[in-house]
Image 1 (cartoon, rainbow over the protein chains, first blue to last red):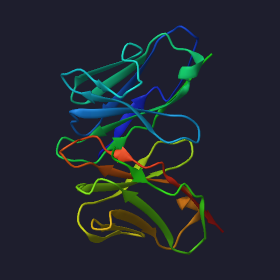
Image 2: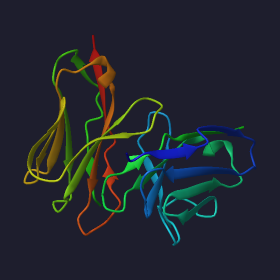
Image 3: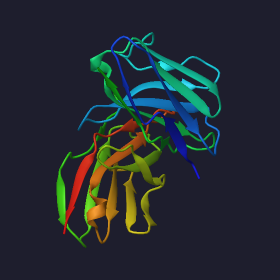
Image 4: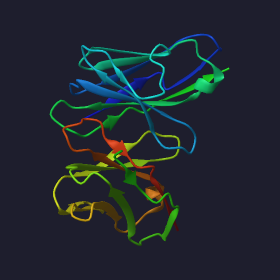
Length: 115
Length: 112
């Protein structure tokens, strides 16, 4: 159990375009999901906390207008990178927390390359 | 600021040995602790959770928690080359926050 999927797994886009990443909890409900970014050989960096039915909470330094988060249901959160630039190229990972637990389950990640 | 500290390593152990990974945390009121394994280029996967002082065993893995000393450790018995990865410690702060703090991770290398 406790499977989280993420789509797409890999995406290449041109500078200036927008990219949407989906995160789904497949076998549990998750009021809370998290979005992380990780650069090569660096630690996880929390970008935002996504809560179903309410606005996401962004970490300091993360532009909410650039990284749009929508948590439309108890099993789906989306991250849209708007007007992507090469410096947005990174490994984006979501995680979901079952409603009756503290354990985070991570999606497989999305590798974004902006050319 | 709540901090979670881990030695970045790399920690190198021979195959079959016990690997000991340590994590200290600053928030004395923390109650929930987790260990994740992250292979290079992959996302983290949950290995174990521990909430009470003492040891918790799951297969070759043993998590140890000492709240008085504010440390949590992970022991891997009979280490295998496939255990080579970065191990992340995560701690939920006190006060009911649902946002855990991750350590920077310890790189483990198990050599044949």
